[in-house]
Image (cartoon, rainbow, N blue to C red; front, side, top):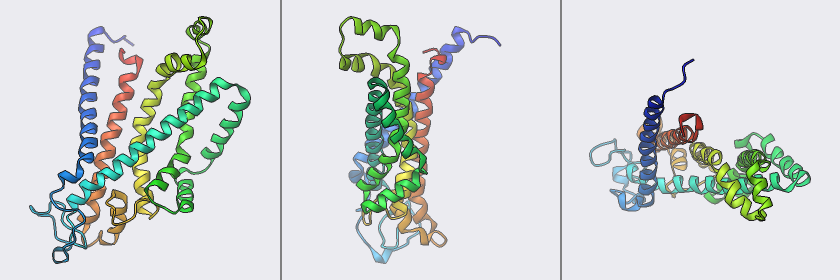
Length: 282
């Protein structure tokens, strides 16, 4: 099999760069738009107009209105802030917490490593969403409790990745040289370990955004996440699911928003993974 030429590698690298700019830009635009969602809404998302209830999609209401006459486009836009920022908060927390646990396990030795890894095995032994449902139900529902429930089942994957990467780096020549030069443990971890294990952790986190978004929406759909009248995509689908056969646009609008957001973040995750792959000429 012929080795790729320098020209081929350069073309492929430029293609990956273009993908990174496109999908990174779309994801950033989504995050920024959700932050300013209240200003982007054409109508008050919580204003009820019973005389205009269940209106079909039109120029005035692109996604129609719900049973209370609230503009669905406005509710989808304002719901993006809760859905997207809750997801980013969740992914950021489990990434940081799981990475800290993984590095600590790999660096501390066999006893602490064994105890913490067995705890992570216990969390991994349960079906993820079922365990999250149980935790969220025990905590009483709500967005914050849904985040806590999903965080409880999701941190072990990051701990596993960080632990394996740290163990691989721990016995390398440059780490031994850093020890001999008098570097302390904290400096070695921050200056040498973290920069070299950050790539796989970042890829895992970006690819996890879409999954966490759907799971948060799933908890809200089942009544264990955001509570009405808060506009959140999962709870909006749950609140209007009985209208799916008669007024499908009311339910499909937030579902379409989830679909588009998950696709964008998944494509960004795939692109980041390819970009960081050393086989692609990096």
